[in-house]
Length: 236
Image (cartoon, rainbow, N blue to C red; front, top):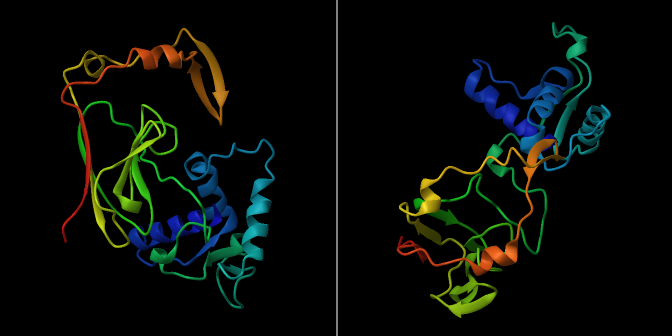
């Protein structure tokens, strides 16, 4: 969160300020930014006690190989003392900022919204991954998920793998296409509001809760005529 906050503040300053800043005040810049965008930056629930600002400072003071720390203004500077401490990124090249891990077995990068109807085409470049359309499950796990693995070009649906294409590798750009009919009853209808259901709070958000009858819903599923999912490497 500290790295993301400073990277965003640095980018905002470069694009909006006449004289871009590289160092940012803990109280005037960093803490307000994290407080405003907490839900966008982490899935962790916002702490009830206001102790997290101190933890932010401790983290950035400790990680000197990532953050620059300036605790007091320079002698003769007109900067007010209350603006300090200030923090900045040691590496000012924002393109070098990546995930905070070295090696993970599996990670997901997901879109912000799903596909209900219409036609969508995506392209992706990668180092090593599988691609899929899925619904809250591993790639190709169930009836709601379709995936295409880089190794041997295997496709997966309902956890069953079948040959689909030749494999793809590092440096390839992949095209991913889905077509969902727009003339179905589901596509034309507005989503239910569920306002007569129980109201619950989850991760600082309010939801109306309805019990899902998954087995019954799966048995009633039918293939939508004209629907299609396809994938292919882009010729360079």
